[in-house]
Amino acid sequence: MTFVEPKSAGTVVETPPEIFDPLNAEFGFQRDVCALPHNAKCPVYWTPTEDGLQQEWSGILWMNPPYGRDIGKWVQKAWLAACEGAATVVCLLPVRSDNEWWKYVIQGEVRFIRGRIKFVGMPSGCMFPVCVVVFHGHLDPGGVMKIWDYRQ
Image (cartoon, rainbow, N blue to C red; front, side):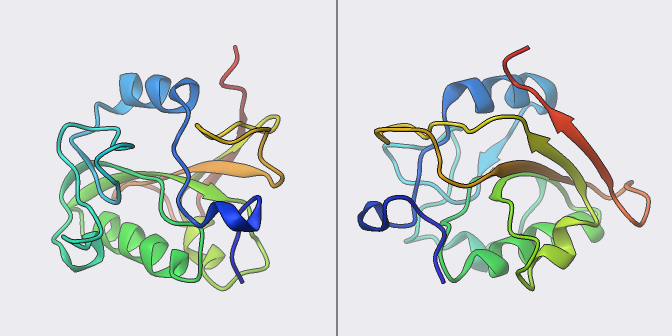
């Protein structure tokens, strides 16, 4: 199952600046772990050629993963890097509480985004809800959930 809109758009969507910029101001990202040269949000990033899933993650990282079948691998990698204390990973993810990988999400700090965002280059707002998930080593077990209105 893939989580995209429309289906022909593929699984890679670019983060809108109104989502990324306030998060970057809050966290100060050092690397975009899954990007393409034209949509990288940080000066330092890994492309599919470098395969961020095969890299050692450390520092303060941004992740807007491909919203396809492998999304669970990206979420698990982010969670593990935080659990090991090597990284803080801030993720932009579809809200899919019925998927197996969601078990990692609920252990992070989940910021449900109020309203539907519009990804860069898409003709309209997203057809599904998205959230920001923060994985860091000092989170209490059980996670933290709240609503985030990036427009305020």
